[in-house]
Length: 220
Image (tube, rainbow, N blue to C red; front, side, top):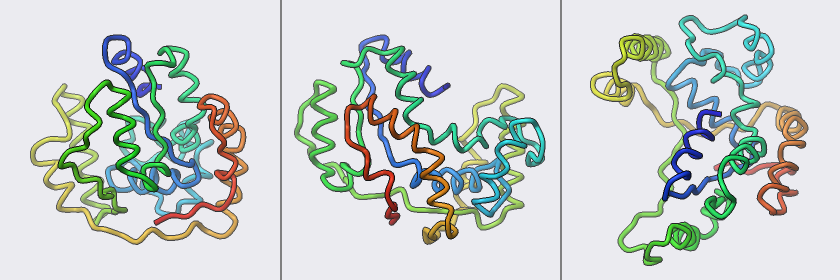
């Protein structure tokens, strides 16, 4: 909701919005890795973290020090159909350009030029690197990650800016690249069923055939 509200505020002026969309079944592991790396997630088993959503929504089984339990609601975080629907309720359609990550992977320069064209800028990409840089990563130490999360909470409670300085350097030092592992047996099917209705909504909102999102997803 907060992302939709922020984008709506930006698009209310002269700026326009370009949003990147990925299959929720592929997004779910990425969201889990990110929350494991930067907090507040402590459950390393991805399927159990998904199963804990209902209890956590009631305030149970939350990791110690959790300040924003809504961040652990993976279904909401990956429900792009609902997000895009709310966005278009706040922002005129002509101010929004949807970018699909699968298009970016297939034709990076073409996707980049389409965004530039939408923003009314020169379509010459110039000397811009379009290589993939968002590699999978995980923390070297969960204890250090917990300390970083605690430090961030203290900074926010004091009204200080987060994501800068010592904590940022410590987070980078605690980072290691990992190989994207396949989902547990049967879990991908469970996720496809869970997101079927939202994918149908996203298909309607973006006027794009997304039927292939209901099949097995390839992850690099």
